[in-house]
Length: 359
Ligand SMILES: Nc1ncnc2c1ncn2[C@@H]1O[C@H](COP(=O)(O)OP(=O)(O)O)[C@@H](O)[C@H]1O
Ligand SMILES: [Mg+2]
Image (tube, rainbow, N blue to C red; front, side, top):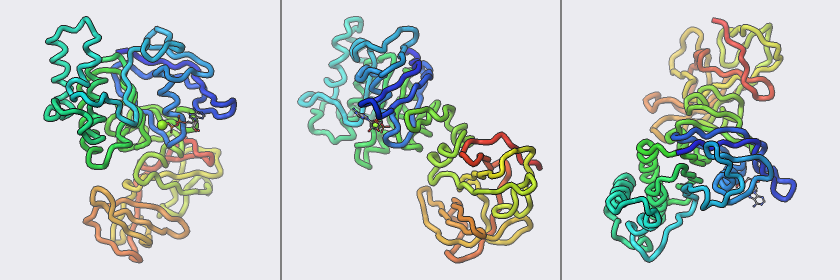
């Protein structure tokens, strides 16, 4: 395994499309970093530069201390699994996995066998070992592609949205297999996805990308709970964070979500954006002191058997995720409260503020 270090890496297409903007960061050795961001933000371009399929416009790429910026893909000795499974048709699953290993003269036949058995097992491919890959569905083929790359034990493996083009039924299975795999192996892995739940389950660390830049980097819970800007709050979560605009009133947040003014320790901002995640908003059907009445505009059942409520509090609209057991009808009045610890404060430009709420 090796760490991957980028220094001022930039990629400009046709002199005007800035796909990747001067990135300087390290993907630590032996861990899984999920590169997460919306479509078009530059994820694939970055992977292709690390793989050697694309040359940076400027900047350098290092694997440990070796400069690889201008090396060909084969000189980099890395594994890659991209959106569409690359498999050799007309031969069996086992033979697909064995093929690259036969070029490795340092491996004894017993070691080769052991590696094959191990990946067949981890990826639930043992029952298909003797099957011709041409007869398999797309999801299983993608597993074969993953198995082959993992069995080679390269120092680095790049995954670029490997489950995007897999049918829904195989998606879950492949996701589980990948999770098992990344926990077992200690290769340096970069896993690209636009799917935040995938990133939350697989990553040791998430690098959140937007418009060719890394906006934030951290363990999944850190990015989820403390987004450094509005984008992270919005992009992570299903649905994302609620943002409520406040004009500071004598240094306090007044009205809306809050029954009592919430005083801030210090701030020079005139406008504050208050962020709260839908599942952190507390909702009940009976009134209580310091709970604010809200009208239920919409109630929908979402994944996990929860209710997603759209609530109106005066002129503001927020979403709340509540347990199924809380029975509410559209048009009904409910009562809302929030714990100050669950609030994230942003300035008018969407950058997180260090300002604190005074008890
Ligand atoms: N070969 C190319 N020529 C011109 N523009 C490209 C090329 N490849 C990617 N782009 C552009 O670069 C940006 C980033 O694309 P990409 O890296 O594929 O994003 P992602 O993988 O995050 O969806 C997009 O605006 C895309 O249109
Ligand atoms: Mg892509």
